Length: 267
Image (cartoon, rainbow, N blue to C red):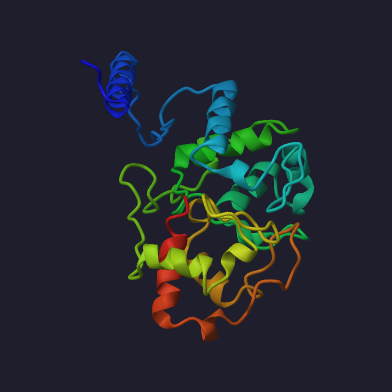
């Protein structure tokens, strides 16, 4: 009995899919877990261990590499190569470690010329490092051309308190808008893709890539940037005054909240 071609194709497809599924079951499964909190309080930690921990935080939970490159000029923020040495001369009367700590927990205290004030405090959401993590990150930054002498007691005891560090996860910020509708506004009426890429949405590189904007910026910044882009500063490396100042007039209240809701999904 001869089987129709369509039936033969279906049988082959089932066999192939079954073999792949069976093979996949032999591959060890890796469970996805959120970054674990680092706690160094009360322990004997060498400078080398502290720097290593800070390096990991810099590249992962701290999300520092998204804006700051080491040995490479960034478009969003300054190059941090040699920052450990530069920090000692950045503010008269302030030590390198004091300047670096201030830059992490109160980044608007000193704004590097040519860059907008877009950095969030690292011990507050959305980054929310705890006190130990800020200590390690400071040591890593000191190690970039400087001498590591930061101690845990140099980090204010209030750092990370209530900001998601030290235990409980930070509460998620939600918007009353519809993120799915907001995506259509981003691609349509808002015209955002004319200047910005966002994950799977292609866009021209006139403005910064927004694929991780909710990971590196606060909801407050995102909401204000849409309504008052000029007032929130221009990201270095991109032309100023390009983003329209009229979204507050052209978008309805619902369209605005929908758009923000979508932006908050970009992590």
